[in-house]
Image 1: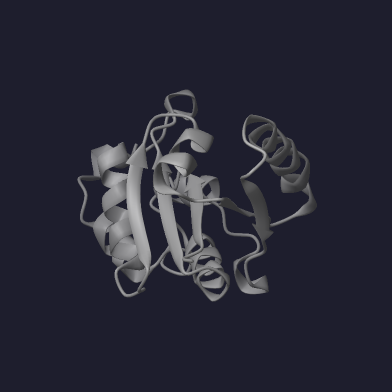
Image 2: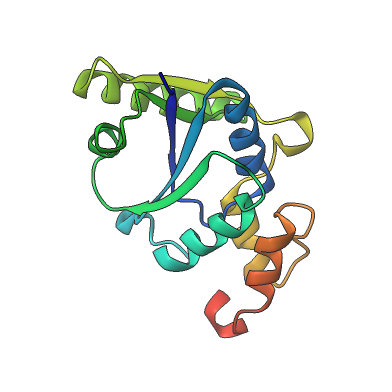
Length: 163
């Protein structure tokens, strides 16, 4: 039986920390689906199509990884794709309370779906999409925070898109 894990998030943009979590998840599961959320309430810097494209570019060299966009409940998406594991990344203690609540919520919606929390490597522990977006707003250095493919896509965009 193939074990499928769903890694949902806004990925605005996908970072080295996200990539690290995906690579770690591949050591544990047969298939990882990176699910890029529309996230209307978060008002992302990049469109859903741009974020999906960046995620595709970032994980292009990894086998058994699929990238999809979505705009529905994560638990419904997990059911649709036959995933009984949700992957969530934990960088710091500050992430834990929110992620724990989310895990309990998802479990209350479907007790057959488990949440697995993975930590990125220490060098990626501080990397977040919000830090990257802030740097991008001021044309700051981000190449050490993003997969090279994602950095190239972002730097190739019209600069007024990033404001």
